[in-house]
Each structure stands twice: as C-alpha cells, then as structure tokens.
Length: 219
Image 1 (spheres, helix red, strand yellow):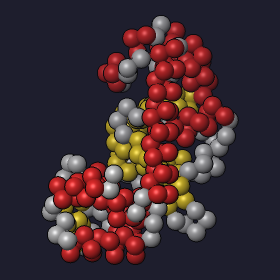
Image 2: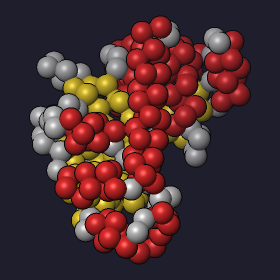
Image 3: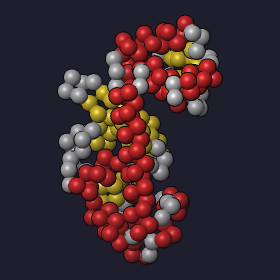
C-alpha cells in the first residue's frame, strides 16, 4: 500500500494531516465481471485504480451499450468525480474488465483534500479534463466519422499489445455503440481486403500498417 501512495504524483506536496486523510482510503479488490457502480447508484468515494481495468459504459433502455472509457492503472473515474462534486447519482455502469484493485477515498476525505491541497486538486482536475476531452472526441467520432474508420481505429488500439484479439463481434459493437450486424459486415470487408483474419471469438490483425495508412487518408 505504501508503495502505491509513494507513486502518486501529488504525494510529495501533502502535509502530514493531508497524508493521514489519504491513508484513510479503503483498498478494495474485485474480480473480473464484478459491478463497481450501477446507473443510479450513489457515489461513495473517489476512486484511484491500483491494478487491473474497469470499463465504464452507458446502457439504453433497449439494452444497447456504448463504451465511454476504461480506467487503467493510476486512473480515476471522471463520472464518479462529477457525482461527488455535484451530489448526483452515477449516470452509467462501471464493470471490472480485468481483476481490479483500487483505493476508494471517502467523500468527506475527498472534499477535505480538494479544499486543502492544491496538488491533489490539480491531480483531480487534470484527470477530469483529460477524460472529458476524450469523451468529447468520442461524441464527435460517433457523430461525424464513418463506422469503418472508427472500427479500424478501435482494432489498432486493441492490437497495441497483441495482433491476436480475443473479441466477439458483440463486444466490438458495444464498444462502438453500433449493431453487431454492422460490425460483422465491416469486419468481413476488412478480411476481404487482407487486413485481418476472422475466426470464432478471435481476430488476427494481418496488416496493421495498411489500416494506419487508411486512417491517415481519412484526416
């Protein structure tokens, strides 16, 4: 626990009382598939992820999902931060995508540190601004970009660590906020172009460089 606290970018600028408040945070561990927050839940604290990954997404009344963002190491949840600041309930769903360990700082301690520490305040609002910028880019992408462009960008992003993607067509559709049939049709077209190879539950990226060239041409 102490190693994680020492890695926080604002820790050296906190006084002893502020550090004591920070150390009040709960260390929680949740398994893959666990629900961290549901739509309508009260936000109980400020989350900082230690390890794993949490997926945050919206869900329509028809059950259609739209991925908003993922929280990864040292990341925070902009929507729960917004809830804490405004006193609202959580407007989306947060589910553990990879076994996650995170700190949860109580609302009282969060408010205290936000008020008393300029370094903590900068950390919170820098994270908030970056995530908000990404959300605005997502909205623009959905509104103005063609689905094949968004799909190519998504596949390249997911293929950063491995060219073999264990993703179903439905998972991709949920991430892009579209229908599974649309994703399947465009994946088949990409396969015909030689960009990728499809098999059950997996996608092998064959020509990521060709996909990058395609995306550059869309700018």
